[in-house]
Length: 332
Image (cartoon, rainbow, N blue to C red; front, top):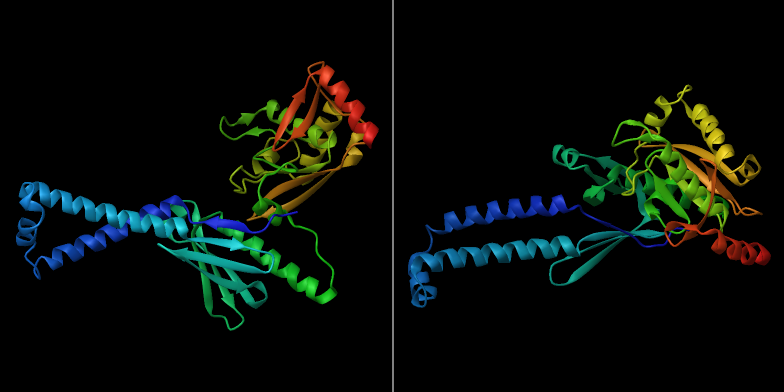
């Protein structure tokens, strides 16, 4: 289950942009204000009494710049959005934080937008409109904005369906991605294609099988292939192109081949594959149920035993594995 609230912050590049804009604005104001006040005389009557005039000028300008930067940082630091089960809350402020709540039941439309700056920084804006088609909230300069927009649409659709039939809906892949990695959920960028080195890397297949084995040997879990650690949809296209059959069926056939060789065909019944399109890219949700017997990973004529510890996949020595197996499957 997703743990609410989900907090979304504006990216650090938004902070840099705001600092630059404010610095330019303050600089223009200072230049214009020179004509309205004699700052040299003011400095000579204050700071210049204690230090040289040129030092006083540099010090006062530096202090003003530091103050402006601090104010802009506080505003950025205190501004975030919280997605809850039935509402979105925007928090903002400088020295005190105020909140604005938007019930999801009042939302009519969720729109993803992206200007040139946001494209360059891999950010975007999510515009939310109410039942009267008025813009009531903009989540500006946030990472994975398109993913968040799709997730909000899914959450709103689920609320509508629940209100119609009174039954809760199953979590979508979007919900899972937004919720982030945890003990029962992990993301993988690809199954076999090494994105950084641009070739098929069988070690990646082994890593995926390690995670699945750890889920099988504990309480089950989910693995989403085609998603980076920072929740960005990478997609399976590179994996597809590395296979004889370049589509979902080709991917699943190859997955089955690797699974049967590494973990054993008899455990395939505990693993279900679902494909879904996110932002125009295929991702694969691997849903793993707990196994009814211990599962060993077999690679290069060696057997390894893995379990899930927190957010990590941990290998146990054979002596540790024996004790774990004895206690875990006896309890089950």
